[in-house]
Length: 256
Image 1 (cartoon, rainbow, N blue to C red):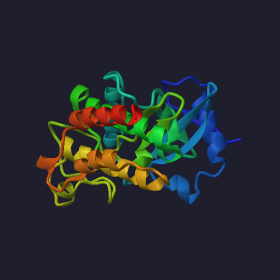
Image 2 (cartoon, helix red, strand yellow):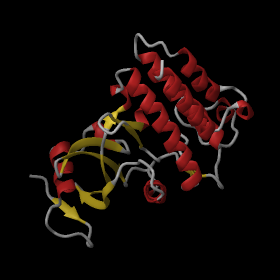
Image 3 (tube, rainbow, N blue to C red):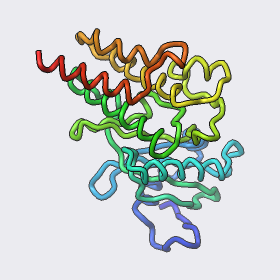
Image 4 (tube, helix red, strand yellow):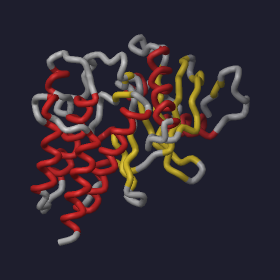
């Protein structure tokens, strides 16, 4: 059994997230996968699926203050009432003479599990609504919206935004780039991130999922998604406008 040394403020008894980390990582944390930061793994917690995001703090590329800022952005979005992973643990742990920061969150399904027309419509509406609320209620920009960072809960027909590693406040946004193919062209050209650049990433995410589902006749609705990806940011609708347009289109489609 791998010995786990908790931080002084933690209880001595091994906690569930520590046990999951030990069991999922096994006895050898020297494996290449665990040398990069952050690394992820999934496990069970209180009967629900949990996602563990772990940073190895003695990695020279990891700056502790940046890690803590990411966690604070996640909490800020959560407190603003957004659909983001609920955090049930955050804190430091020492294992194998290395120091880690563990963020443990309740999880949902992958965007890639969106399987049909109806699910895609609800996904699109939920994504537009939640990113708009991120901007208006939490005053944050996500800056890396893509299918892998959007979790889909088919039972609730709702999305959950995850991974705030690139997030910035609207007031202090810079030109940090997200993932190629989902980053707005103006940000690729070193302009600062804005609500409009996040909107572009939302459009690119929806278009990627649309292309991945066969047999959909989504021409009219796809037009409203494509409008989010206009090259000129001034020509893009706001996320709130896109949401209302899509909701109207969905209602008219379903009334046929």
